[in-house]
Length: 294
Image (cartoon, rainbow, N blue to C red; front, side, top):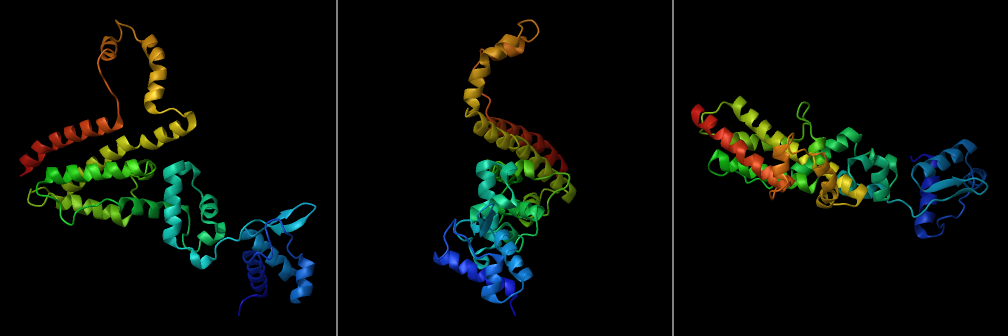
């Protein structure tokens, strides 16, 4: 049987959803609820506390308890998938620093406490976000012929996903890896790409970790860069252009001749160019090692 205070909460919610009570309207006081529902004052007080916790009402000094705004969605409309999707969207657009359970609840129009029925806590949510994002990698069922082609493919797919989700790279740990099923399947796929090469599984796993660490390392600059753009309003190119004069001022022809010469060349620093350069050198370096092991 539903607790008396919950029946009161459901009735007030119904009045708000139907428009009978609008934002800013006073809701019945605890004493009024006692008279209307024939309950104890403690039950009426508990109902008021539950209404505030669910975000339906707020207490305004000198006025009383009033409707806070449109009624949050019913709990049955909330799912774990919706929570994860909202969290990823917030992290994508505003950064992980802005992500909180309260922020997600406000985005979804639900009470903060209702999230915990689907997600036990922040750590569990972060793991789910990682697993969902990594799951976006469109890995073919089988690696392409040749380990190098497979490794290049997976590195490019990882780079694409990291660009789509700038928060992902710095959130994933190498020393204490999160047990995300999709991340584990990714490692399994890479290890399978070396079937027939004679490489032991330990070597294959190290190659997977080294490749992932390289891509993640470059991608770790994406979120700080996105935050810098939001804070300054300047793109990376605009910021570099603004710093050119200061940069040249610290150079000395005798102490830094290579830097001075570099400024006269058409040198372009870009994270994608850095990724491409590093990936090619990494694959070149692995080639003789894999051949020798064979």
